[in-house]
Image (tube, rainbow, N blue to C red; front, top):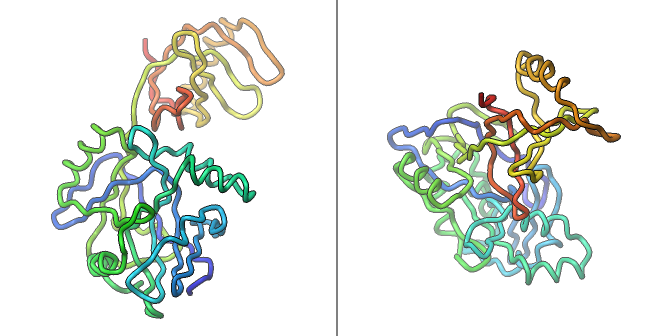
Length: 285
């Protein structure tokens, strides 16, 4: 198990907070999933898809635990100048593979590993151990540092979600305290994520010719592309109007007059002011 690829347990999405009595709630960090393998002071790290990223994050070797061997589950994040996780920064770290680039970005975008589970300890599997007991063990094992921490637990999911919204964080995860750890699966009613989506109104200014895409503008500036198609009846209604307001085209796009407004759900604004993961909600008439 140690130092081998593991496919972790996945989260079930929900549009509302699951605030069941006794459940545990934690902040959902905006980074990428990482499994940390600790073997007598030597550390390796793998993504949920099995990609080893150990050499890309030299700060991993600073981690020290109160045990000989362990496999820990969590998120790799980078905290920006506003004291919030920045997905763009952590992706810059993830994509840096050459040693000179890695060393440069260690200083520019230091990584932190926010942990929320332990599934292996000193040759013992914790897959059939309850979440609550695993978290108690995780607290004992982890030695907090600028590189590593245990994600705090909260009893009131709705209250935590409102706090997350106020801080502009990604969302929360609600968990059944009696649940076991199921590898490579997304069990129902066990780990449930609720994302803190934002909403806005934007103009549609272009239609991608190949795969689906609607270009969005705000005050005349490009702000993102909707890449998930809405229902067929919406596409049909839009097509009937769009063909009457075409103003030009390029190899990849048909441009239309920016007169159609739509309500869009998105995760956040990027550093460049673009929408991250925008999706169509409705037309604004």
